[in-house]
Image (tube, rainbow, N blue to C red):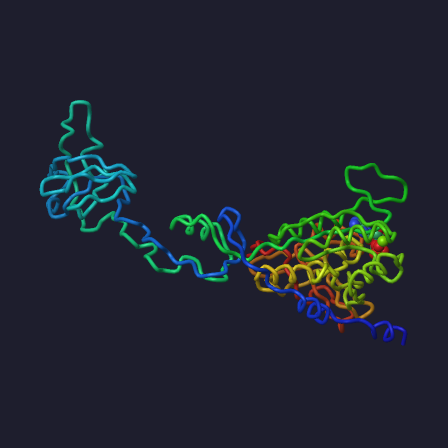
Length: 426
Ligand code: AMP
Ligand code: MG
């Protein structure tokens, strides 16, 4: 059968991914400002050089007292204590609290010697004071408990404790923790630089004027943004035209990076120059991957002096390039960054309409996933043509129709890859 012949030189999505990923490695580490470290992977256990809090301090604005002085205190029978001083956050107490005395203390200020309890202002006569009150004494209205409103030295972190574990991904709170123990720099796996290259005589940069027969280059922009979303560094190389000189020029400009992502010029019917030149500048394989969209794919390595730079040639159609990016470029970039290759959530959802698979490929259908009371539904976003970018823009998931299933009908269950890890479905 024609169809069998057609499938004979195709490789599966898994095979393609495996062949690609074995050429990617975790990048070297470097020391950077913690301000630039969000989302990056830490390369060593970070040990706390300090206790946090570094000293016992007050959790409230109030009075530092000796608990036993206040045992009998109540609203009716306040215990009057002599005020020694006011201790502000950032200052150091100068007097020891002794029987019959108290120091005013602000939140975060070090607790003075002698005191073993903090009485909040609300439980003292301070709030009742007027212009005529004697402010050298304060009346305590409640018995203080030993340790009340103390923030204990080392309660959060103690010296020698691990602040951030090796291989963890930095979050805002971990970055705050690093700052809290005084680190301004951190060793992380560096961000890969990704060259982005579009190819085609028909392409025009947005912002330029467009002539009959031309289209705006959208792949550069969607791929750029996808790279940025992964926390890597996108580097726009530009548009290579369908002629030798232009392709050579653009490939040369791409070489000083960790990975080159090009789009278009990889399918069978293409004007051959892109394929030929890329092939000459390294070793490039052109595959038919058993998927829809995004069947044609190129992968290889470009020669750069003594080393090689991996290159993936995505298909040109805007949806194909994004779906192939998701399957092949995303895991490669995550691998270089020291992250798990696949972090996407896959859920089971009930399909509300249908997905057709007329030639035994793995179909990735653009869907909107919704959930009501824990039941997920998936609805296709409309025209599934590989050039229909609006239906990709509406989607929050890709529903998978396996190779051997000709059709998924309304009401049947499908696996859906969630395209946004921050989606909270309930
Ligand atoms: P090709 O693989 O070169 O035959 O391109 C396949 C289809 O994708 C054609 O319709 C191209 O015009 C379109 N295409 C290629 N590159 C881009 C791009 N950068 N932005 C938008 N569409 C593109
Ligand atoms: Mg083309």
